[in-house]
Image (cartoon, rainbow, N blue to C red; front, top):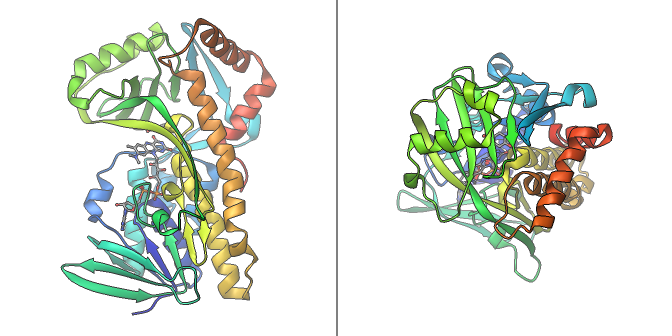
Length: 389
Ligand code: RFL
Ligand code: PHB
């Protein structure tokens, strides 16, 4: 069989790209290794930049987000027993929207199903052939049978552990990586959020984050050792530790309850260059990872999709190659800035095992400068709400 674009990976990048291409009459086949329910069971990001919301609108899948998402005009940063506010809307004119990645993904799957675009689940042994030539194709195995799809282009949206990045020869590909010496232990609980904005907390005991999904569903994280596993942490131990890391007034108000999900995510910064090889284009986690501190993972995936779908449209609608030729350069220019912000914001809030007394003083001065300096707050707000595409 044949299609215009094969999309490998049915996470948010692949699904959003598929919907935007469909809206402009470009045909795709999407290949996903897991089942739809498995993909929807993963609890991940929760904060969407306005640019991402705009893409969902363009794709025609923002209805529920506008009804159920929460507009956040700013965020709280807790430090030294107190808390200060960064006013995104006042400083940039732009809020962020709190709406879970799970919900975005569900909306995108529903929309894809509704338009009848082809999706193959539980595919195995996906292989990319001839991406550096004019006639690429993709093979995969499903239910014990091998299939082949010829196409014009391949979008590698298969996450950090996917096959797409590996298809780019080692002599062409260059990777940059930083592994952080801690992880985030996260829980989801059916309790009301402790505050109407997110609270990012620096404390001597380590980082903590109070986040949410809706009025009845909270998401909390604490920095933990890489050697910890979720079973090491009872709910009681989690709540106790969280309360010690946030200001007293917040700890007193915190409503606790049983966790309905508990997991540990390691923290990593990673970028692969280039993001294009011939007719293969990488998008999202397949090409880059950020530590979750600035909520940029999902949002950088969306900016890649923006550059790729505009490049593909220009190719099909006007036979223009420039957007595709400059895809890697444009996407990476924005990615590196999001990498910098996430790395810096992580360095501001976590306790590092090898941190000297001097390093600690520098960290405290860095946060105090953010608290006290209007220009620094503006720079923070611009990065958090998302740099322009
Ligand atoms: P995804 O979401 O990983 O989706 C990739 C999809 O590809 C499928 N796949 C394959 N399909 C076919 N053939 C293969 N060979 C395949 N290999 C893999 C996978 O099953 C999957 O469905 O990548 P995508 O679409 O680029 O989206 C990126 C976002 O998911 C990611 O950036 C964020 O979730 C990162 N992230 C977070 N970002 C935030 O902004 N805030 C957070 O709080 C946050 N928490 C997280 C996270 C990522 C986590 N990971 C990756 C472990 C928490 C975790 C635990
Ligand atoms: C979340 O709600 O899961 C979340 C929010 C902000 C972050 C990271 C995670 O920076």
